[in-house]
Image: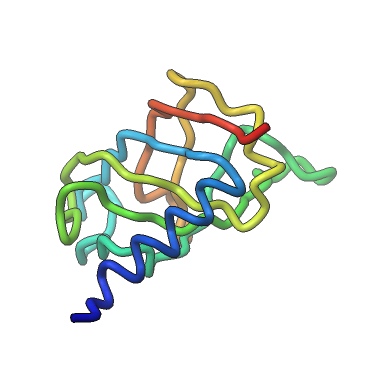
Length: 124
């Protein structure tokens, strides 16, 4: 029997084996504080912008795209906290991340979540 969730996880795992593993503890801001009003879907569908600390030449936050996979749950409700895996569009720009670093998730202004890196491993 072919299951789309298994296929999606296998595809995700292949990306991690090629580009590295980025895991974080994601804390979604409450809707009253400008956070999301709907849950974060759990299977790599959401592709928000992330601020890793860099700045553009104009001094604005340099935002990078990464898909989100919620671990051990089908979704992450607004205002909650959970472990996630991140799949960056440009993994080379994420190689400076180390456990304990804090990054922010954006879907506009203000930021909708903060995440503390719990694992950052790179192949090779």
